Structure formats: C-alpha cells, structure tokens
Image (cartoon, rainbow, N blue to C red):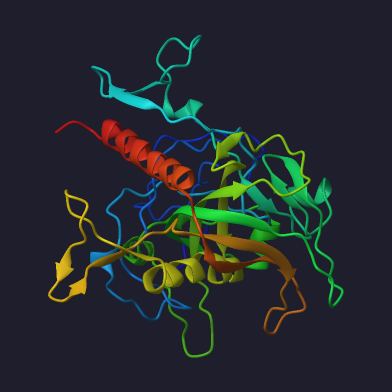
Length: 359
C-alpha cells in the first residue's frame, strides 16, 4: 500500500465549511477546522466496524436515512475550539440561487438571509496532556463551549467523581487517518472520510496485518450530537434550554480511538439491542410482523451517564483521559426532550435537503 502524507501545518484560525472536504484526491491538504457546527443531521452508517474494522454487519433496515455532516477537525484534545450555543429551531427555504436561507420563527429583530454559517453548536472537550487546551487547563478538565464545566476527575480509588446526564441525539461514524507521533508533532493533520471505499481510493486500509498496524491505517471515529442536562450546582451559562422542568444544552463531541469504542460504538450497539420502540401506523397503532410487534431503535429513548477516567493503553506508557458512558435503563426521556430531539433532526434534514444542488 502507498501512504499519502499530509504536509500542511495546522492553524489556530478556524471557520466552518458548508460541505465536507472532498477525499477524492491522493494529495493531502489540511481539512478545514471547524468552530461552526451548521445544523446538518449525521447518518449512522449502515455497517458496524468492529475493533480494527475487520468485520461489518448490515443493519440498513434499522437505521435512519439521513445525510452525514462535514468531517470533524482532529487534534490531541479530540475536538476543535468551542462554539456558541444554539437552542432555537429554524425554518428553512431555498433562494433562487439554491442557497439555504434560515428564517427564525417568532424571533423579532432578525432580518436578512441567515445561513448555515450562522448556526453554531457548543462543543464538549476533554483536555489531554498535550495540545493547545493543555496550555490553558489541567489534563482531565471537561470544557463546554470554551468554559470549564467539570474539573479533572480524581484517580484515587473509591472517590465519587462528578458525571453528566445526557441524551444522544445523533451519531455519525467516520474514518480518520492514523498519523505517527513524528507527523503529529510536526503539525500534520489527518484526513477524515465517511466510507471505507474512500479510504481504499486514498491507498489506505482499516485492517491490521497480523499483529501489526500498517503505516496507512485508518481508524473509526464519530461526531456525536448530545443533549446534556445541567449538572446540579453548576452555574455554566450554556444550559438555556428548559425541557421537562430541567435545563439542557446541545453539545458536539468528537471521539476517536479508545474514546470511539468506549462511547460512540457502545451507544450504537446498545441502541440496536435495547433502545427499541414500536413502529406505529398513521392511526397510532403498532405495526405487526405476524404475531410480533415491529420495533425500531430510538437513540434518544433513555438518559445516559457520562464520566471520565484515565485509561492505560496496551504497549504504551501513555494514559489518556477518556469518556465512560453508561445507559440509565430506568430513566427514559420525557415528552419535551423527545420532541426537542425530533425537532433538531427534522430541521437538520430540511437544511440538508434545501442545500442540495438542483436537478
């Protein structure tokens, strides 16, 4: 295999693209860093990449048909700089030149054509021991919208650390090029694509060679949109959405490596097996497959708990901070939370459709 090497330095100036960067060329270029999260709904891929990507399972009939978002930025802290809070659904129309126009409903004072570049989500970050964030915060600090949300968890045995309650709204699986330590240290940026086919076009692979990871290896990663409940006692200003009597905020979290397997992949597998609800017809009655009720996964059916801990890597002295997620099986989401998640997904789909090129 031939490994194409990116030779573009990373920068601190960040802007958001309206569409994901193309991955058709074998020449590396720096993927546009994002500090703007345009509201486009990601698609959960119809194949399940297990571990090193050696196995897949066709689950197309269970998954929502939605378009994926742009490729996320990647750095040692897993995410790009934080974004402003977005908590209002928007109406969308298409102008004569096929551009998307946002029309905030019942919001006096907003005029003109508002575009996707104006809609921003805050981002959830976990500070590691290196990278730009480590110059401002201690390793293990949880950052939400550029402001500290939780201090580093204690590593002492028996200590009860603070956690977050959250609801996953959508998860988009992507693939990220795995760079060597020297390449990362020199400021090179990995490419991010959506499919294995794109990886193969770029001369990459998702498979190990025996017990050896090849130089042109790509690993699964995920872009997760989460609805986070305001922690008790927190005065963070990012929780301005009142649902079912509690305050929430929307966050975007990027996960790769161990963080992908311990969060996004675990949520995916749980949704496919445990977060199931009946499929209803137009009369509100469940559809049947013979004598059995037809069911589908509902990603935001239940609350989850999100904690953070240090993980020891195999054959490595590096112990990064990683997310630890756990389903709360008895804590189902209320009507306001479900309606809000549905609104986010529905409006995002409308944005994606309006932005599509005309036939």
